[in-house]
Amino acid sequence: MSQHPTYLLDRAKIEGAHTLAVAQKHGAYEALRKILKEGITYAQVIQVVKDSGLRGRGGAGFPTGMKWSFMPDPAKDPRPRYLAVNADESEPGTCKDRVLMEQDPHGFIEGCLVAAYAIRAQAVYIYVRGEYRHPYNRVFQALAEARKAGLVGKRILGSDFDCEVWMHKGAGAYICGEETGLMESLEGKRGHPRPKPPFPAMFGLWGQPTTVNNVETVFNAPFIVNRGAAWFQSMGTKTSTGNLLVGVSGHVNRPGVYELPFGVSCREIVEDVCGGVWKGKRLKGFFPGGSSTGVLPASFLDTKLEHDAIKATGSMLGTAAMIVMDEDTCMVRAHEIIARFYEHESCGQCSQCREGTQWLHQIFRRIENGEGRHEDIDMLVTLSQGMAPGKTICALSDAAAIPTLAVVKHFRSEFQEHVEKGACPHLPAGTRRPVLAGHGAAH
Amino acid sequence: MALPQNLVAEFNELLTHYPHKQAALIPALHRCQEELGGWISPQTMEDCAAFFGLEPVEVYGVASFYPMFRMRPPGKHVVSVCHNISCALRGSDELLAKVCEVTGAPVHGTSADGRFSVNTVECQGACANAPMFDLDGVYHEDLTPEKAARILGEVK
Image (cartoon, rainbow over all chains, first blue to last red; front, side, top):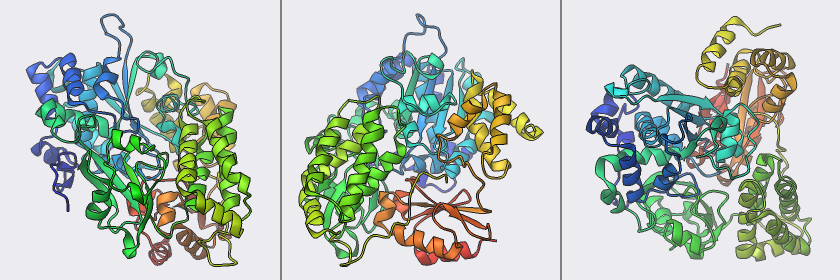
């Protein structure tokens, strides 16, 4: 196993850390106390987070301190202001925020409070995907304990800092993980993303100044307040600082959620941390950061897992949810599944996305079923080029187009093989994949 | 018809969390589904519309957007099998086939005896413990067809 310094999951590994007594014994709420007792100003909190280089852990990697500084000065703009925490974790392959919520809910609540303090929000809304009942319940119970102990609500720890924290359940729509879709959903509407500008810092929840942060992002904040920017920068790389949670799924011996510094190689993750590709097989390819990030062939395994290095390959770090595929994996089938997902999750506002995701799914499906034509392969490319980049209100269209462009670029010969054979070469001759599932129905 | 008193009391408490009433609609629909037969009936939508001061069609517009809200009554138990990429790579096709075999329910349907509904669902965030299903709101992870058969066999 790799030996890197850790902090994110240290408390989570302690028995009973989801209770206030155990969590406090192991440092929970120390940063909040420090801020309130030492009179650290909100500007100082923003500054130390800026200095630390913390970038959002929800997929876009935007600098967190900068995002917080976009909130208007309350002296000039006295409107109510909110923090919305994105716990709608729905990007296929991503299962990291759940670990923090289940195993260290007090660390998470403290993160919410530190972020709320920095942006001077009077209320936090934690938007949890509806399926996450267990994580929801854990945070809900932790909140009740924290409220009773004077850590949440009016005059927190006897200071003049008031902040309520509310939990809010989503109901199964991926698009609500997009920050403006999340806000619409929180307002009790369909999760239709809003055109930007105006940006949430000016016009967010109910039209008020709002910051939307991912669970893991706010979770980092108390550590930075306690240990300083220099400590945070000592982990990771120059432009991707600190540790991050890497969720590894698919064909490895030890799938899991691991805490690693930015900059470890994908090879170290697959071969050392996860014990290699399963069944002694060879690696065919991997998604570095969830299903929206373009697939990379095995030859990219030495790439460092950090924003710049992954971007240089043409893919993206995303949520650092690595999905690993062995040599027997059919890339067409894998992308048929992903295309189906985006078709299912498109909110339907923009025609490029609503129609494009359906067509992508249809084309992938017919190639996989041996009914594809040679021109279908280029049609996947031209269609994707019509869907992205930046052609729609939000990035869901891009999220469907980018992996399509990547798989055709890196694995074109597999598509040709399907077309020429008139069948999926990964299935026994004369068989077709059973059509078990349609989609669209409820849970 | 009107909403039961216990739900009205809960919804009134929910309203205190938000500056605008409609924000409580989705949490309220969740509670309705849990308490009122496992689905959002037209009657429920009308009752919620009355409570929230909305048109029934507005409630329908919201409820029908979200896959977790059921627009028809489910069986006594609901099995939701994840079939997204991480689960597919580790055998969700075989898992789904076994679930259908054991429960007697077709995909997106209910068994003849009304005991089980089976659905496929998109990623449930259990990717590192794939494949998985959700049985009546509880995740079962790291499944094999055999384990799944055993779990479903123990359902009363």
